[in-house]
Length: 333
Image (cartoon, rainbow, N blue to C red):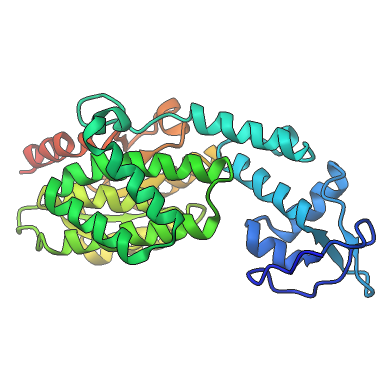
C-alpha cells in the first residue's frame, strides 16, 4: 500500500471502491486542489465524478487516483475549459488536453513585438533552462543566486522581459502538463518575487512630479507575479508605486486610492478569471473612483481584448507602460 501524502492531512482509511488505496478527506482534497467542497459535491451529482468511498462514519474519502485527476481538471479549468468538457474524462485524456493547452497558450509579447521566448534567443535559453532545473531540484539558494546575477548582468527591465517572462511560460507549461507540482510553482514565484522586490527597492522613490500608482487584483485573482512585473516597469519610469498585493475587494481599492492620493490604478487579470467578474468589477470600480483617476489593466484574460469598457485602458504588454505614462504626464496641467 502506498504511504499517505504528508501534505494532505486527514485520516487514511480505505475507500469501499478501492480497498487497498489510501483515502483523502474532502477537506484535504479542497486544500490540495483549490476546488471547493460544494463544487466536488455538485460534480458528484451532475457528472458522476468523483465517486468517493466512505469511512466508517459515512464521510467521503477520495482515492489517490481521483485526487490526481482532480488536480489535472483544476489546471484545465484555470486555462479556460468548462467543467462539462473535462470532469470525468480519463486521466490520459486530461493529460493530453493539458499538453495541448500548454503548447497553444499565447506567449507574452517582448519589447519588439516578438514573443518573449524568441526575444531571449540563444543567449538566454540556457539560463532559462538552468533556472527551471534549479526549481525542479528545489535549490532555493542556487535559484536566488542565478536570478540575482541575471539582474546585475542584464538590468532590471531586460531581466523581466527576456528572462522572467519566458521562464514564467516554461513554468506554466510544466505545471499544466504535470511536470511541476503546485509547491514547486509557488517556490519559483516566491524566489522571483524576492529578487524583483530587491531590485525595485534599489531604485528609490519617484519624484514629486511622478504619478502615484496603486497596484492590486480583484478578490477572485490570486496570481500576483504579473502585477509585480508591471510594478517593476512603473518604478523604472519613476512612478511612486503602492502595491496592495492580491485579492483586494473593490470598495477597498477605491478607499485606498482616496487615502493615498493615487492617480492611476493598475490591475492584473489571469486567463482563469470569469469574464463577468472582470467586467462587473471594473464597472463597479470605475463608478467608485473620481473621473481623474485612471484605471489600467493587463494580463491574459481574453475579455480585456474583446470588450471595451469606458474609463478603462487596456495595456497589451509591459512595453506599453512607458508610452502610457508619457501620455498621462503630457495631459497634466
